[in-house]
Image (cartoon, rainbow, N blue to C red; front, side, top):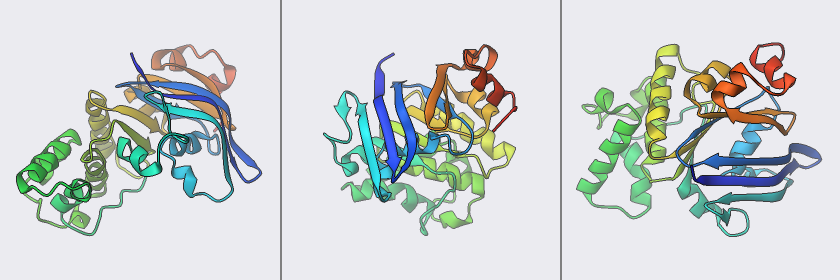
Amino acid sequence: MVEKIVASSLNVFFGRIQALKNVNISIKENEILGIIGPANSGKTSFLRALNRLNDLEANLKISGTIKLDGVDIYRKMDPESLRRKVGMVFALPIPLPMTVFDNIAYGPRMSGIKDTKRLSNIVERSLKQAYLWDEVKDRLGDSALNLSGGQQQRLCIARVIAVGPEVVLFDEPCSGLDPVSTAKVEEAMIELKKKYTIVLVTNNVKQASRVSDRVAFFLMGELIEMDITENIFLAPKDKRTEDYISGRFG
């Protein structure tokens, strides 16, 4: 598989606090990379570094490189261009205060697409990829705020993919969802990897085992171990990995 993102000797500091320590990691095209680890392990800092959301933090200092398709995202790309290619779905779904249709069409409209038929096709395709179309196809004119929590999260997924990214980052997307809604989001992720590269930060190790092709275990800012999912869960090389996934700490 082709390497989509490569981080080399990546260090991230917020003032005097070092969030990531010499991280070296490659993410393959059309895979789901699950990232696990206890609180303050650096996993969300790593995720946010992939589309430069950390730029918004005060006293940020970064060394090393992150390359997307071989292009250094900090030295050769501006944040706006990067975020069109690398979208992000957050833990808390935040629909825009407008209709379901307009939530999905918002990004394409902002990028200059005005044709109604083309927008309708984008909305339908995005909602289908997010496993939400069948539930909302007769409610496109309703406020997105009336959807359930699980539906709102899948709406946010559809909104991200509507602008045509190449990578989708998920930051604990099911943390506030019930098991049924969680299962639908997981189904959507598995379907989405056919077209997108996916990086999933999750505190749910069982979720990582269900949907990930490979898993990376972070601890105190370091990448401890990374391997195919089966090896991480059945035969981890590092005792700290084994202790975490077996619930001995974290």
